Image 1 (cartoon, rainbow, N blue to C red):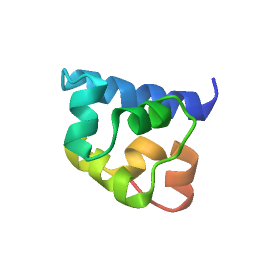
Image 2: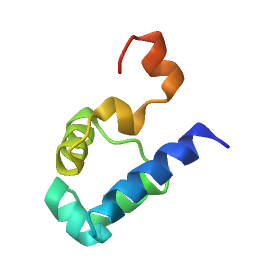
Image 3: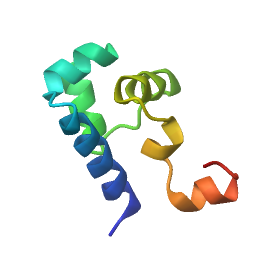
Image 4: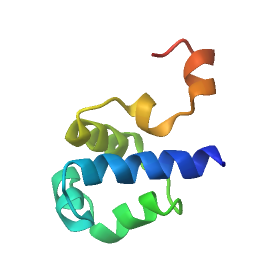
Amino acid sequence: MNTDILKREKLIAARRSLKMNQREFADAVGVSRAYLSNIEGGKYFPSLHVARRISEVLNTNIEELFFSLDVRKTHNVS
Protein backbone atom coordinates (compact mmCIF):
# COMPACT_ATOMS: atom_id res chain seq x y z
CA MET A 1 0.00 0.00 0.00
CA ASN A 2 1.21 3.52 -0.78
CA THR A 3 2.81 5.20 2.26
CA ASP A 4 0.93 8.45 1.50
CA ILE A 5 -2.35 6.55 1.83
CA LEU A 6 -1.18 4.99 5.10
CA LYS A 7 -0.26 8.43 6.51
CA ARG A 8 -3.63 9.88 5.51
CA GLU A 9 -5.43 6.92 7.06
CA LYS A 10 -3.38 7.32 10.25
CA LEU A 11 -4.35 10.99 10.47
CA ILE A 12 -8.04 10.24 9.91
CA ALA A 13 -7.98 7.40 12.44
CA ALA A 14 -6.28 9.62 15.02
CA ARG A 15 -8.90 12.35 14.53
CA ARG A 16 -11.72 9.84 14.80
CA SER A 17 -10.21 8.34 17.96
CA LEU A 18 -10.87 11.74 19.55
CA LYS A 19 -14.47 11.44 18.32
CA MET A 20 -14.09 14.67 16.36
CA ASN A 21 -15.58 15.36 12.97
CA GLN A 22 -13.63 17.37 10.40
CA ARG A 23 -15.24 20.67 11.42
CA GLU A 24 -14.42 20.20 15.11
CA PHE A 25 -10.87 19.09 14.37
CA ALA A 26 -10.27 21.92 11.91
CA ASP A 27 -11.50 24.43 14.50
CA ALA A 28 -9.17 22.95 17.13
CA VAL A 29 -6.23 23.11 14.71
CA GLY A 30 -7.14 26.60 13.50
CA VAL A 31 -7.73 25.84 9.82
CA SER A 32 -10.79 25.62 7.61
CA ARG A 33 -12.65 22.35 7.25
CA ALA A 34 -11.96 22.46 3.50
CA TYR A 35 -8.20 22.77 4.09
CA LEU A 36 -8.25 19.88 6.56
CA SER A 37 -10.26 17.82 4.09
CA ASN A 38 -7.60 18.45 1.44
CA ILE A 39 -4.87 17.35 3.86
CA GLU A 40 -6.76 14.17 4.76
CA GLY A 41 -7.51 13.59 1.09
CA GLY A 42 -3.85 13.88 0.12
CA LYS A 43 -4.28 16.98 -2.04
CA TYR A 44 -2.21 19.19 0.29
CA PHE A 45 0.64 18.56 2.67
CA PRO A 46 0.30 20.83 5.72
CA SER A 47 2.76 23.59 6.47
CA LEU A 48 5.08 22.96 9.39
CA HIS A 49 2.97 25.24 11.56
CA VAL A 50 -0.25 23.37 10.73
CA ALA A 51 1.46 19.98 11.11
CA ARG A 52 2.65 21.06 14.56
CA ARG A 53 -0.88 22.16 15.53
CA ILE A 54 -2.34 18.87 14.26
CA SER A 55 0.20 16.88 16.28
CA GLU A 56 -0.54 18.97 19.40
CA VAL A 57 -4.30 18.44 19.11
CA LEU A 58 -3.72 14.70 18.59
CA ASN A 59 -1.14 14.60 21.40
CA THR A 60 1.46 12.95 19.19
CA ASN A 61 4.53 14.06 17.25
CA ILE A 62 4.85 15.34 13.70
CA GLU A 63 7.20 12.55 12.67
CA GLU A 64 4.79 9.82 13.69
CA LEU A 65 1.95 11.37 11.68
CA PHE A 66 3.63 12.63 8.56
CA PHE A 67 6.85 10.73 7.94
CA SER A 68 7.31 7.13 6.92
CA LEU A 69 9.18 4.66 9.09
CA ASP A 70 12.05 4.65 6.56
CA VAL A 71 12.51 8.41 6.89
CA ARG A 72 12.35 8.23 10.68
CA LYS A 73 14.99 5.45 10.75
CA THR A 74 17.25 7.28 8.29
CA HIS A 75 17.18 10.42 10.40
CA ASN A 76 17.26 8.53 13.70
CA VAL A 77 13.87 9.80 14.86
CA SER A 78 11.76 7.60 17.10
